[in-house]
Image 1 (cartoon, rainbow, N blue to C red):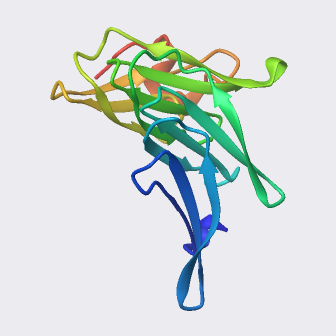
Image 2 (spheres, rainbow, N blue to C red; image 1 turned 90 degrees about the vertical axis):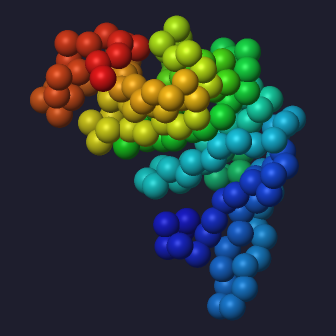
Length: 181
């Protein structure tokens, strides 16, 4: 429903995420997602699975799943010691990337056997905060921008989550976290 352009999720510069729907001639608030302790700095709503991921300056991330009329949060283990700044679902929606003030990027994925979201962290590649992330359509390459003035492209291949095939392109030879551009 959110991709019919009649529903929107946004943060009104608080710890909450508001979901509004457009009815005939006005926007009406449907839900308030409240779990973060500090300002929400990133939101992404998946196209196919209808999940919302949020990140905050509180260094946490939640994946919100709609169950009936309610949105249920699941905490994501980010392993950050600074604010989470941005978030974006991968094209296959089986993982997402979180940029942070810790000069790192967390690649988060769902671990079925433990029923939780965990992350692998790309560290020591950025010299400052990671302010934006963008996925390549192959679901493996990730571009990042940082306040160090550089754009980097990483391999984010995760065993058991990603498949190595022709769609991966050159990344089949790269390990998780390696910079190739």
